[in-house]
Length: 92
Image 1: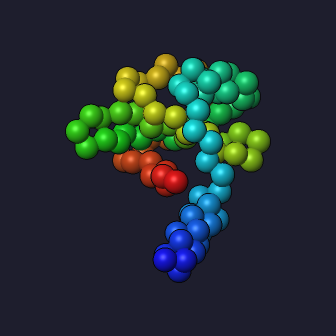
Image 2: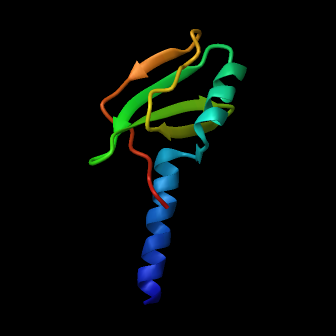
């Protein structure tokens, strides 16, 4: 059983190494963060199998901030937007 627990820890550590630090925040906090950024780059994708939702990713001061919303967010006009098919964030 200890080997299985160690395996889970190893997988988690490898995921953090691969993705860096991803901070999940609520949509209003995400939009406020974008307003503080001079020229934000926002990666936008969709997710969900049964209930579609919009996913957003933005790097700020060394952290990747992620949020999701059932409706599209009104992004600031000064944001550069990159649209992708999907955004995969590991679940821990």
